[in-house]
Image (cartoon, rainbow, N blue to C red; front, side):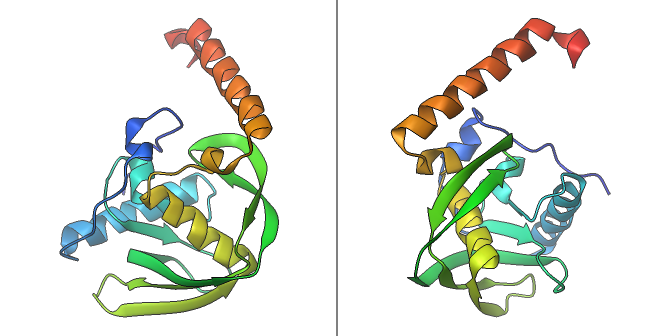
Amino acid sequence: MAGYRIRTFGDPVLKRRAEEVTDIDGRVAQLAQEMLVTMHEANGLGLAAPQVGVGRRLFVYEIGESGPRVMVNPVIDEQDGEWEYEEGCLSVPGMYFPIRRAKRVHIKGYDLDGNEVSVEAEDLEAKLYQHELDHLDGRLLLDLLDDDQRKVAMKELRRRAETEQQQGPAGR
């Protein structure tokens, strides 16, 4: 089963709010399976549909011993506390930033069978849910940086783009 190409910073799909999934069918299940392959190939913990160019509200993840999971139309309805964690993103590869997020969250959504899922999470798992939900709302972790951090990050992203452009097709 082939995976997808992960969209990176600058791709407009990453800045748009994803639309609700209205019908959890075989196409959604196939998308989720291919997203899991892509996530595993990239050594990620989670992957949102916009990161593979699909503007739908779902993400896949695998954290701890629970095995791979899918969350369709997720909503965080409670959050509490605060903690800071060095966070990276498959759509901003190789860059990590200290991001302050809620320490605990309650998230609801649906699985691929259309059953409601309700999860209480904290620390890394809570961060994962918040990070993936940001993608569904058209936000990247770069949007969470303070002005100074963002300037440094944008300078690095411009440097990378220039290097890539100079290398041309032969360097890829």
